[in-house]
Length: 359
Image (cartoon, rainbow, N blue to C red; front, side, top):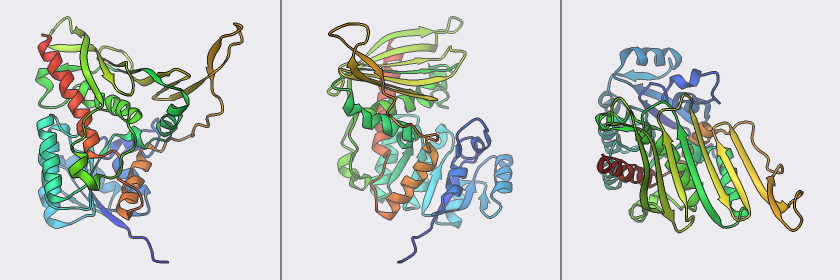
């Protein structure tokens, strides 16, 4: 039996998601690209770059075997890794991604969101198609075991009636002045919320190697209606709450709610079917089935389905890295494709435009 190949990888960006979240003792680990790459025996992390010398020095202490560079240009000139991971700030996605694509690695893992704008996202897609470089976007919940169980359970809850997806944090939902940096929750964490709605509502597609046809797909959400906007009392240019409604051929009632004035962080999805319900989010996953009611004769109620076995670890990050290996091995199609990320970005842009028009 021939030995399976070991793929080389290089990391662009040694900040939180690139490196330091791997030391958060409260998070399920691995929680950063560095730790997840190093934990996979089929990957050898050979290099990293960052414009921040202190961050790069700290990373080098942990990954002494790897070579470090002060820019992606120096890294790309010096080595040709099989996998390039892009974990830079959102405002650097476009230039970094274009340069990485032109170096023609076997795979690029791009941190979410794809880009600041749809225009930038499409520029990345065009370059990827031109150079025949597959891109996987790290919308991590697509790889988490609990969300995989939720998607499988969808067929047990009957026809879909409604989906409510809600994100609460203290980060402002939107502000025009933050468009250049991407530091607002509609983009930063809202991309996760929108992506998991898309994930639950769509069938797994084949392969990003068929990018020319896949890039023609668009979001299944349509007829967007901005139902409410709450603005900061001290600065009306800052949006603190939104509620947005969509229609879908799969589910007639899809609502996305984002709060930027909560004194807590939460992320959750409530999927209601004609015969069951799924509630899933950060730290919880609940599944409900239809049974004869115990309180009323001739009626049915929803009761907790305790037969669903939930994992002790969701393996969201390690599964993402393993999915990259499986794709390169040719054993599985690409998951969380660039087109998936563009579909999410398209919805974000629609919401952003509606907020601007609401002023």
